[in-house]
Image (cartoon, rainbow, N blue to C red; front, side):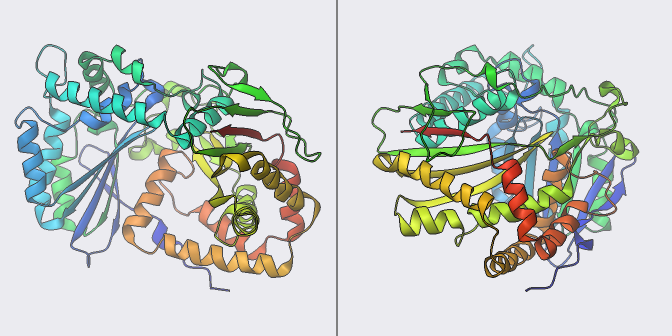
Length: 471
């Protein structure tokens, strides 16, 4: 088996900005390229209208008080600067990829973006035409999504897991765009987009000159905590029916007690299957700290923002179990449902970490007539994991795959910084880490977990699974 890598490179270096804010960075001066991530606490959990957080993420910085949208686009294009945008339930992220020689031109523009007067009195750089174009595009994206079985299955699956009162259990529909206004987007940006509360991460060609530019342009004077109310507990009973027909499947005696939900999508030529559950591997910490005193990840107060932690040992062992079941091309689900039965071109299982919870799910697109048979085969493979220990030969094969995949996943400073950013925003790791306990635990699980431990995990956690089919 491949030797475990050193995890020292997974720990960011820290630079204290003049205002006391912390910039984390992963240097590699051989690249000549820089990645800058700016993460703000501006996800959908804070919105008052559907798509408010998404609209803010997409429109923020498209223009500034000094440059209109055309000028900003030309500035970025001429210098080959790539901007990526992402908004999830908790955070909104802006990523800039740029040649280090353009840092002295880009960072002033970034500061312009955050200093722009977003307001409803006509002073906002976001014009009505920009907003109307976004609304039309987003409405079409949503309408197109609802014609796809995979999109509908994902929405219904999360709705059933969390309930519609939880931000992970809600989703936008095309008609929701009618209630969104430019004023609401500007208000959201005013409330949530501030450099002083942002989590700043740089990677690549980071040197003293670049850090000096960061001191000048990224050190906002407006420091302070940002409200971070507790996420509600999942409440599956609050899901909406909305055309869903529920039935209890007959799966060769395998108990799938939470239910089987089938949704008919007209004109669909295939079905999408989603099967899974919420895993109980998150444990809350620092409960005695009032929520209002938990600032976003910044400065020396970061540890107060670190309010959740994963049970690293069990979760890491479950990652091995997941790989056996459906985590790589040689997995049991692929061997059975793709190679043997021919029901699908691809099927996989995975875990998705959210702040405060982890979701496990299996998904595949299958021929409509094979939907029920494919679901039955999935539960047969789960039943095998619960009833029979994994062979030493199969486990060794999985160990080798997982070790190689982990080494590949951190083979590059941008990959390392993205891994850290995601784990910090979901509170998986302390934002001021001295070690990486999850990586350490994962490497231990890959090399040391036993067949008996994996069988026990399957018996404990691969039960009470929700099944959704759309097609």
